[in-house]
Image 1 (cartoon, rainbow, N blue to C red):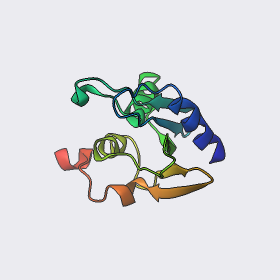
Image 2: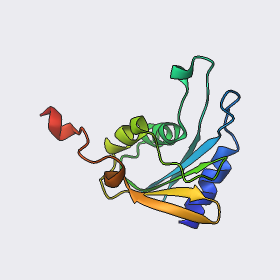
Image 3: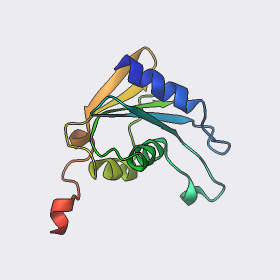
Length: 128
């Protein structure tokens, strides 16, 4: 998982975060091993800001990928921050509950599953 954290750290460097100064990078790995990255992109109208995880997910979906096996997140604070609720819900559309979510803490990492971070989620099954 070290390579995935490094990809998230590299993506973080491209962040546009002039308001919060809280840079975030994400690296989402497909089941075939392809890695898509994203960074946060802030906007003066905060509700239009993009989150690193959703940018990475959008890139992967745009390229035709629908199956993922791991996600890494790195912030400028190296504080082990997890994806927000909105990003968790977006990931749930394409990822199983057992998706590993690795959160960068500098020398160490925290690891969760998507199901731990968002139990009892709204899914496609709920809409049928």
